[in-house]
Image (cartoon, rainbow, N blue to C red; front, side, top):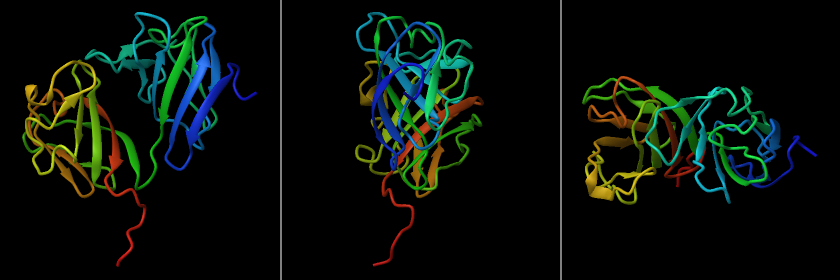
Length: 226
């Protein structure tokens, strides 16, 4: 009864993460997500319709990206019905977003919002310099994904595979292609309170805007002395 399109969800309000299933109608509507705050990043995919992309909401009501493609953010006011998500629902438009609401298809959605000391979703502007801009997260990231709003890969680093700075070639994966670790070079520092690009790369440090999703290595809001 929350939202105009019925949904079933599993939500962890402490972690700011929800998995939502709904049957798309093809008409604009709202969908309950079960979180306690408005999602900042949403990833939607048809479960049974061939040829559809992984549609990504990144904080812009009139644009979306594709998790499975290097393409730049696409202009489509219909994707999210030009409506910001709220603490209870998110919106889709008429057959919106490539498509995240095609009639009769079953959809899966993964929704995230930042949780202090645990996760951070944000943006930054690269400086196209080996001494890249410092990006503050408030914790040491254990897992980090970065995407340019221009055309480039979804870059992923983690501190299990990359154990020292700089995170050099062999510690990078991409979400949108079949590259293996050592095919793409990456030079980035994971720091105690954020991260810092160490190369002029279109993937994470050109003079354009980027979005990122980071999860903490030690997900505690306050550290306790032993």
